[in-house]
Length: 135
Image (tube, rainbow, N blue to C red):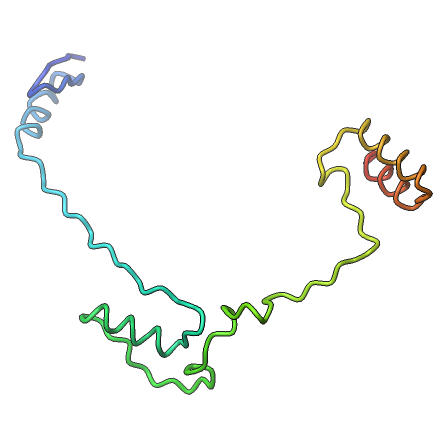
C-alpha cells in the first residue's frame, strides 16, 4: 500500500492503482443539478376535491389532472376537515384501568396505588392494579 497526495486529497491504495486514482481526481467534478421542489396547494377547511384539483392545475401548468369524476362528493366540501363532525366516535369504558406496564410504574408504586384504591373502597381496581403489576 502506498499513500500519496493529489490536489489536497490523501489517497491510500495499491501501487498498481495509483495512476487510475490520479486520473480520476484530475477530472473536473460533475455539476450537481438541484431537483425542482414542488410546492402543493394547501387543502383548507370547506374546500372540495374539485377546488383543490383546480388550484393544483393552476399551479402546475405542465401537468393537468383531467379525469371525468362520477363521485357524488367530488364537488362537496370535505367532511374530514369539518370541526363540527368528529372523525372518530369514541366511547370511554368506565371499567378500564391502565396497566402498570402502560404507565411504566414500579411494583412498589403499583402496591401503593392498590392500597390507595383499597382505602377508597374500590376492591376491583386494586385487584386489577396488583394483577398487572405482577405480570
